[in-house]
Length: 278
Image 1 (tube, helix red, strand yellow):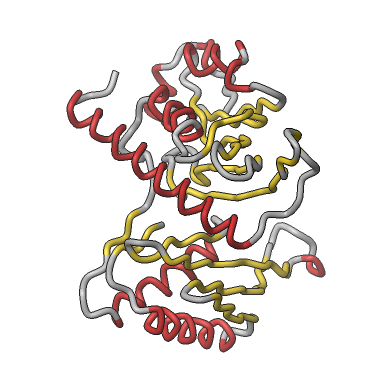
Image 2: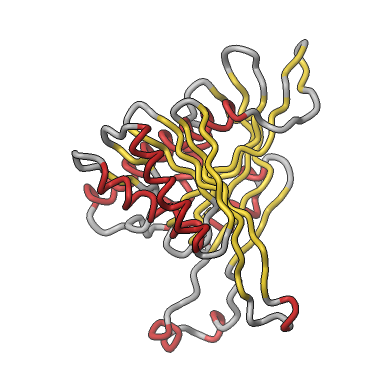
């Protein structure tokens, strides 16, 4: 999510402190880390899973919400689950009450882009359109095919009684595999999650591994970015992977979010111009 508007870092800090107090009052743990004008709220919370045995029902989870300063306001990254989404939304609502001017919430989603091929194209074009990077390899592709609604199931023939909802393809050059092409071309599957490596075309030439997904694959909502690792490029060779630095995570997240927003807007414009999708 992008928050666009004139947001004073001190106002954001005040909002974070207020939500932190609420989290602690509910019996969970929270603390805030500040780096310049960037903020991270780290939360340790408990959930009750009634499907498990009595002694294993309470589960302790860790979550993070990051606010990364951008030219337009703030980029927000968080784990895509119900608890952390609620925390994020409460912080944003608090900021909204503190900032004198209206702030705009921009989320990357393809809810209105229902054509499977266009949803797949979002990921393909995103991976090849990062400024200053070239796509090196695609290692993991997850594709999804929504199950027919109850009304449609009554009209479906016997051949549709078996339904495969998700398929994972893993390896090298996955986007060029005939299996993937068959799935997305003929059987209404579309990509909802992809992992690839991107190499800097300028500077040190390091290779960065990223994972991008929609946590809600049916509606292509809850967009998430994970910068997984960095492979230093030394003397013309790719070295062993290391954990990304905070600065690398922030800059790559901003870059992907910007490119994803542009791809989303382009696809939605095509839908508007073309009327009903085919």
